[in-house]
Image (cartoon, rainbow, N blue to C red):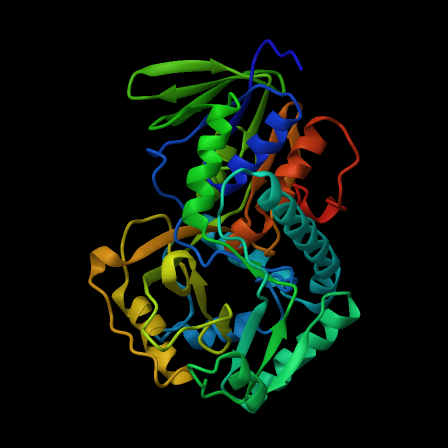
Length: 420
């Protein structure tokens, strides 16, 4: 497909990369611009889970009450740092308005369909990519310490089965059979056998290499400082590398995660996003204490994933505190402390600060991503919160379809970028 000017994708994270993958595969010339050196990002250190089971958005009934309760606990899994910010205030009002049953009921089939599309595309990609990113379909275990939580999660399981996502409610004994070396101290759990996981570090490294080999161009260490517009159309992107340059574009895709709101402002597009910081620790599996199935410690909101090379990754927290590089050791301690509560025999210590990874997840107020056309030749693919890696192939495929004017593979009406 001949183009005089490339499609420019702002952002070399997993969403930008999969958007580039499908556009390039369809014959478009693609150029990716990123402000970082391209060696890290929100997707590198995440839990690597591909989870169609996560069909309930962050803005769900009960999250307001839980958030208020957790506000004063420095080790809690969800925290909004009090600060004076009009953006945060507006985001909070929108979150409050979205956290109701009617909105969640509408969101459930939309998230389910995008999750299932992404998983199918990962299955296809794992067969054709030409590199191994350790994609495994071992399911996901939701581990519950208390009977009350198990009841709540069982309701989610019943809903999952009703909407076509298989879920099994397990007793303590059945959970122990799945994790014979660890004997979890839990009331029970829910198994989602259709979920999968992968090694994000390998996926991203090799996906970038693959795209470069296919002719996709990358410009790293390039801060986007502005845009050249002609009416509603974006004609060029202005970057500082550190010298100033202007890059002409046929179309522009904003996929800069937590930074998307700032670029939106430069383009007069309202994209409410707050950065939700999450932390992870990656270490070797303890000898004789191998975790077999990816799991989420439900009350603690901690994710544990066995990965390639006998590694295990512990991740968690959602800290809405603005864009910053601070590592809050209390939040990290919350993750570390939770592990022996569920796995009493698992040895884990707080690592030194330099071994702790963090990423800033882009959170929209209603917990749904922004996917679609925002202006004449401007497209948005952002706001995926904790689901970026899980929903990336589906989002990339939708970007290609939307840009080409094709019927999207799934209904995108709830993902409309201008909904706020």
